[in-house]
Length: 269
Image 1: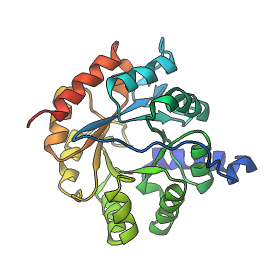
Image 2: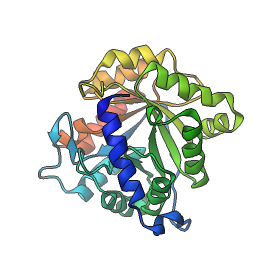
Image 3: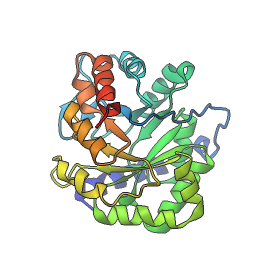
Image 4: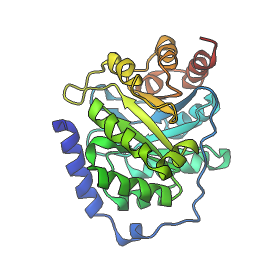
């Protein structure tokens, strides 16, 4: 595990321990929206800052950006809530969920979640899904976090950075309950091309790990998706979705850009 991800996990645990008792109880009255997917889809991400790219949210109104994603055809909206390196907050998650509630578009919390209380917190803030990073957990811990998310009716994007991560993720599919969640599109496998030691993107990882992805799970290409050709390459290599943040945050017309990317992803190969 890289020093960066270790640091993020430690800080996340501090935040988890500081959660109030309110997050021991889930508000099951909060609506949860399912992913509605085509042959290729995009999870559009809102993040105020990137450790690799710096500040992304200058002159951007969050609600306007979220609505642009929705109108552009995003299948879900990912919201960074990590505060120290990404300048995020759970209030951003609440705000996005409020904006999208009437559109029935799911919001996914993206963070370095390490504790079940953060799953409950996510649901209470309006999330319909969460990202979990395989490298942060031992196998039993990962299963516990997954089960907690599914018990809260959330979908999970399970993120891998390496061959070892993907091997651990694939082992879940030996168990019927996780195969069922995958078939119901409640469990997605993500491959992140960013090297967490250098924070640089390695597109070859997307291609190499695609050969190890199981057919029974929808796979998500993450990081380094900046233009139409990146989308075409992801689809050619078997990915069903892409998670895009920086390119959309930097776009002057995110709605139109998102539509162009979707057309490319859904076209004939």
